[in-house]
Length: 279
Picture 1 (cartoon, rainbow, N blue to C red):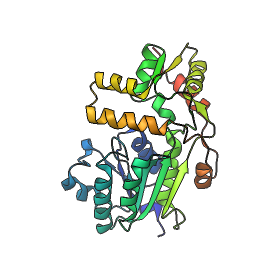
Picture 2: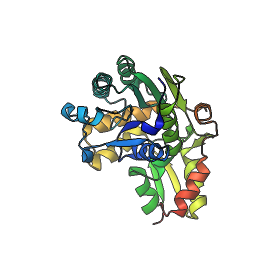
Picture 3: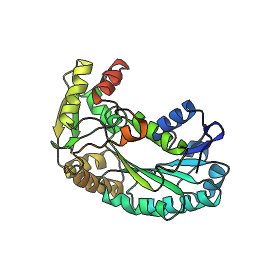
Picture 4: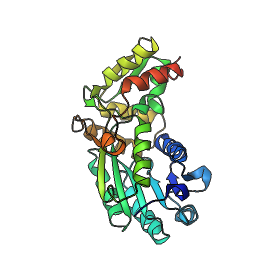
C-alpha cells in the first residue's frame, strides 16, 4: 500500500506518554497530520465507544498499550481495536512491543489476525527510563538507582529512534515492513551500573546503582501505591526480561533509517545539559 505522506493522517495512541509524544513529534516533522489519542483527548483503551471517532478517516495508527503490551488484557483490546480500525479503513498499524517478552506474543498475534497491514516494533529497554518516570527520582534526589537489573547487559535505545522507526514504517511507500516484527536496539551493551556511571560522568554527580531482587523491588512498588496485580505483573516481567535474554544487538534501526542508533552517552549528555538529574 503506497502512502502519500502529504495527505496522511495518523492516530498516535499514548500521545502524552514516553513514546507516543515522540512519535507525534516525528510524524509532524515528516509532514503528517497527527491525531493524538489519549484520555485527555477523548480516547480510552478500556472504553470501546471512544475508538471509532478517533480512528475514522485516518490512514495509519501507532498502538501502544498501557501499562504494557504483555498485560493480561492487552491482546483482547489490541485485537478488537485493530479489527475496528480496518473496518473504518485504517490499514497500516504499528504496534510497540518488547524484545524477549513472551507475554507480549498473544497481543502481537491479535494484531496479525486483524487483516491490517501490520508491523510490530520490538524495542529494547528505553534510555529515557533513566530520565522520565519512577526511576529518575532516586537518581535526582538521593543519587542512587535501586532496581532489579543485576549485572545484565542491555542495548538501551533512545526513544527518539523508536519514533523515527515508527514514522518510517507508517509512511513507507511500499510493503517492505508489512507483516514483519522489527527488533530495534541501541548501538552498545551496557549494564545498569555502567549506564548510571555514564549519567554520573555527564552530570558531575556521584551517582550509584544498587541492584536488588525483583521481589524486593516489588515490595517497594507496593509501598508506593502501585496496585497489587500490577506489582505482580511487573515482578514477573523483570524476573524474565532481565535474565540476559536480550543481551545482544540488532541492525533494526540502521535497516529502517539508514543510520546508526543514537548512543547512550549522547542521551546522558543531553539530559545533563537539560538538568534532568539536577538535585
